[in-house]
Amino acid sequence: MRRRNSARRPIKKASLGPIQTYQIDGLTHEAKGVARLNGKVTFIEGALPGETVTAQVTKPGRRFDEAILNTLVETSDDRVSPACQHFGDCGGCSFQHLEESKQRLAKADWLAGQLRNLLPKEQIECLFDVSSGYRRRARLAIDHKKNTLVLGFRSKASNRVVDIEQCHVLTPSLQALFVSLKACLKQNPILPSLGHIELLEDSKGQSVLLRLVSDITTLQQQAYLDWAQQQGVNLYWQAPKASRADLTEEQMRYYDMGNLRLKYHPQDFIQVNEVMNQKMVAQAMTWLAPQKDDAVLDLFCGVGNFSLPLAQLAGSVIGVELQESMVQAGRHNASLNGLDNLTFVAADLTQPVEGQFLTKKINKILLDPPRAGAFEFLDTIIHIAPQQILYVSCNASTLARDAEYLVSNGYKVVRAGLMDMFPQTSHVETMMLLQKQK
Ligand SMILES: C[S@@+](CC[C@H](N)C(=O)[O-])C[C@H]1O[C@@H](n2cnc3c(N)ncnc32)[C@H](O)[C@@H]1O
Ligand code: SF4
Image 1 (cartoon, rainbow, N blue to C red):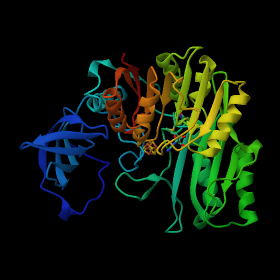
Image 2 (cartoon, rainbow, N blue to C red):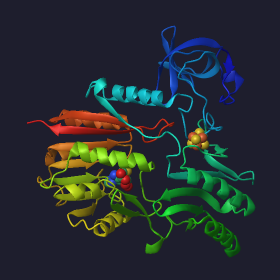
Image 3 (cartoon, helix red, strand yellow):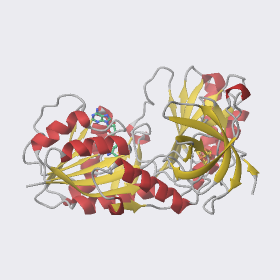
Image 4 (tube, rainbow, N blue to C red):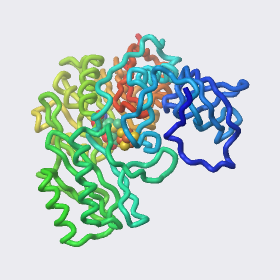
């Protein structure tokens, strides 16, 4: 079968190598097909294992080449039609051309490669749910250079904003809200004043945050307030030069998780996939198994996504978080949910930290750092010497680096798993349980 790759982006002819035929025998977690030609590895975006393709090198390198897919000569049975018309151009998704169970296999393979010094591949577990309509928050970019509205996500290849009509990974109600908001923006242009837009859905309903870079008139503001009222959504404004939207207590948001309610500011971190978040937290409770005589430290705790469920089971929990506003929200959440065994501390965990919470009484630690990992804090963890460490990570390579350090300091990896929190995209969430050796 010969088919042209419709997702191909224009590239200057002069920078293209000759058309060559490649057999694809691997796949990276960024959805690049891996081929070997005359002993040299070539990465070809959009090509799948088992396929024969023609491609042209766009970036020759010393160790490997990068090539652009030209034609599919023989296609894989695992290839499917992308659901989204913007796939290939929009930078949000990388895997829509691959059947969803195979996406997870590719991600699990990649994770196994990252963790190869720590755990056999067969032991990698996998947690997953639906693969579309899962995203409860999105940040939309705007391009107003040409004075016409371009609203969507950044392109795969550049900083260009791709004008999106519909996004399949958003929750169904955010998809509908997106369409209505776009129409409103066209009707009531405030373009040069608009920085970006955030859409959010939680247990309180839907909300839209408009970040302004310059002032707009009261009349313009009223048009958006009317639209929001019609749609039944909460509208927030982030004023020009303000670091975040200034909200009253009443305007704060919340999400429910089991019998817990968590308050947060719409610009605080929350996990984007509600159902997978619930599954992830439940798995964390099963793996770490907090007991009434446990003292647990929850590092990089946000507004208490893990701290609150931990406090329902453990003797005591201390959550540690950089952002003072989230620490305040965490404290509010502890009292809102009647958890008097839960305290929150503000600290920068990349800097030397002192404090009463660094006590040897801590026997379990959960940590969920940003992509950079938690290397700076590992010696402190080793000093505290907890019996168990549950590491949640959105970056398997920093997880592998940190886990190898913990293993070389007396810990053993007992469980690890992939959590498919962001299906269709190249992002992977992981969980690992480490046990202190005698
Ligand atoms: C991946 S989020 C996890 C939040 C929370 N565990 C959850 O599930 O919602 C990482 C958190 O680490 C916090 N953080 C980032 N850098 C930090 C630092 N240097 N010290 C302490 N916390 C930090 C962020 O503000 C964010 O809330
Ligand atoms: S992020 Fe949304 S718009 Fe972009 S490719 Fe994915 S589904 Fe399509």
